[in-house]
Image 1 (spheres, helix red, strand yellow):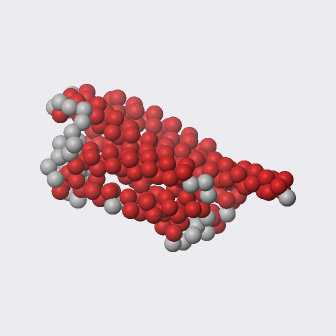
Image 2 (tube, rainbow, N blue to C red):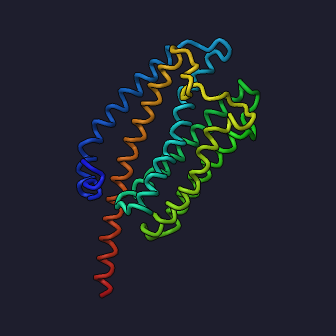
Length: 243
């Protein structure tokens, strides 16, 4: 089914109703498998068991940027292609992205305390991720401040595209500046530098969190569509009563 066919909200809701139970089941299965693999993974020779925070921190960090990328595509769908569900996707994704970013910051601080001797340091990577979290909060506030969904969608789309500048800054901050973070060790041109015994559980957990995002995103989009339908019915009833 094409994106044009899914532009019909009723058809989209029908497809979500079919897909969501299977997607939720896959999320649970992969998440459990990833947690088991992470628990059985060996300790790091330097960090010890503390390294296992990685299996929660890194997937959340990946998704904090990935969700903004999804929102940027949705923003183009709103401003350029006028897709009816683009602003719905963007509004649904913003709280999820904020949660993933918040968890990345919290777990990173917990991991940093025994490794760096501090919970927080104003280096380029940490500061740019904090800026990303604030941008998510700004988008959520914008959606709540503007009552008309169409106007809110256009304003949020512009802010999203402007905020997308921060994504490459986060990604390449460890290469451009001296930071506490190590350079990329999974997605790099020369291949991963992590031992397979640590890498495979991390990739499975990354897939699990990706499935979790897809499940929550579809559920949130469904709820937003239904919420807008209720709003339209209420406005129609109020107009009829006023007449």
